[in-house]
Image (tube, rainbow, N blue to C red; front, side, top):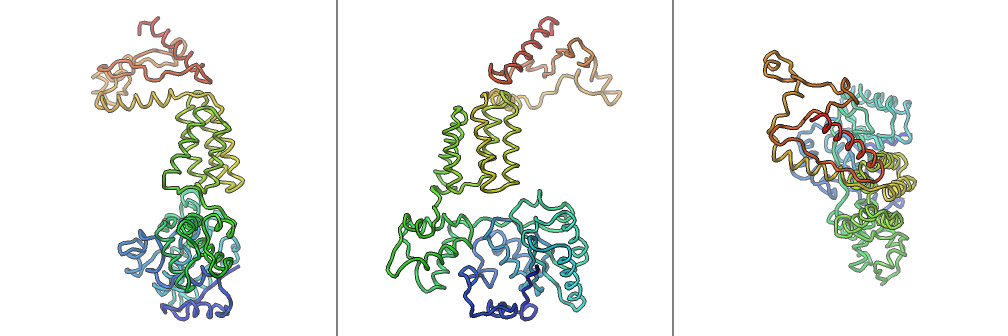
Length: 450
């Protein structure tokens, strides 16, 4: 299914009513607030100053009037579609929009053929592909020829990491522009514009207004949709507090700002519950953070960190389980993928604990800073040249697999600092077995005088 919006004439700064009329829409039909509020100039786009500010990456391309193909990567409601439309207008390109959800190879061929016809008449095409990551590898490859010969200037929009979801060949021909979730200032700016558009203030007290901005969670479209819902649902003279706002819009405000103290308090509590082997309390804090709107991938990263820092070699499988949970969330999304995170939390909370690897690595880092210029013993260095061989490089090196017990026991440390003992495994989990091995090798060294 193809959605094509045609400006009145190339390069013309058409109004939104012109655009809707040209697209066959009834301009008098009711339109959502978010649609009526769609900016008509790049400078009116809320947020994304790193792209659209005076020295922003996109601003520079517009001034040069040469875009090249782009990938817009960012969360929903951050202006990707709007900016693509405005770029087409600024650069006198015909704007064509399709969605990877509804389009297949046949639709793509039709779009490419129409773009070729326009090009023959001297008109370029900006092809905006929403959810481009949903195209399979063959479909993504179909864009390459029309990008290379200039038939289309491609702008693909995705909420997923392009490095993982898009072909390397496609990425090599397009520049990735990262869109950020809107901050509180940008959301406040949008709400102020909405009030000007409606000619009335939002019926919210100060706390409720703050709660509304947190509910939007960086999504400008969501903020405007919520604002419209509030106006529809309130009576004349009614003023909503934060609790009443939640009842009206049937949505809870996050219980903390993800950039502030509550965020760090709860992730600290979750980590300490895991370290303290309390799976029930750990699940409680995990659920609270998810309910508050915390990024599940942030939580997944922290759970992986717990597996490394607090479990380590006591159960090496913990790291595998936590990485698998992260991948499962990536695959399933919300809410199904949240159960994978819960399973990982239970695993790490109930696993045997050891920070021996963590402590050993910290000690190794300190030694490396203190003695970072020391040469390893020549006996374990290769001798690729005759001069190095004459200097004793690799001399008397003993190949462990040829030694009794496949263990030579030779010294690998720089002579100046001598053999060190950094890693001290505990008597828990798999590390109990590791400790026995290390003790056995130490005994062999003593017996062989190493």
